[in-house]
Image 1 (cartoon, rainbow, N blue to C red):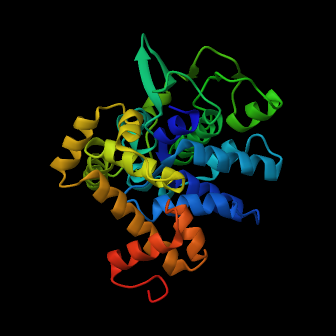
Image 2 (cartoon, rainbow, N blue to C red; image 1 turned 90 degrees about the vertical axis):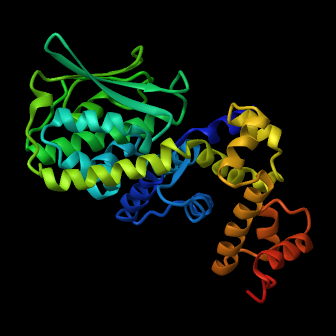
Length: 337
């Protein structure tokens, strides 16, 4: 499996990409068309809660850092985020009774944010801390921006919902610092250390017991029901299918990925994958056609790309093959559509 293939397996919420885009727009900066196009291909063809490869988000943050000449752009973007940027999960944690319950809820439903990174809350002997881990076993080059965004978002939420600033005693990051430590300290309002063995954030003694100003049992129950439904639809039941669709979308331009290659990417046997698809009434070729059709119709309607560009993007060797497929899907040629 190539490095590129591996990166496509690790997913993050598309909401973060949208928040970054909104944050940059206030600075009169737009993300590159190439990144927007990749995002739209996935977002427009993903039912419900959308996930994108962590590599795509990483490239967007790297562009933002280069364009603004600000190595701490992810921290500033995270501080900019508000409840709506986290969807149902944001309103669920906002309506919790205490910060401890809010962080525990975030921990429980963290896969709605990423299947690669987790921030878990721990308590022992009167002490509390947050640990960051990755399901990959290490923190790759895309980790720093993502984690800094999440940390700044959470701290911003706590500050706004409790009117208490600086619940953390210090921050211990597993990567090398590339900008003045004082800048980190100023933004996070606590000492920052780098090249630690793991991501570690000790909390003040009472940090988990702060009362949230927006606690609302009735609204909390409603948001819990919505979040659980979203969680099961987007993560628990179809996590493998989300990864499969994402992999197909990201690799179509190189030709139709073989079932053997996709099975390896998903870490399962070909027979197992066929069986899982069959249980959902799907076939692999049928899924390929469905993804191609959805993308093709979307791109033809947008009329931003030539038919040749669309056919190449969808992995067709010749434009005539794309024309025939499109007419089979819709009953019309691309020009008639």
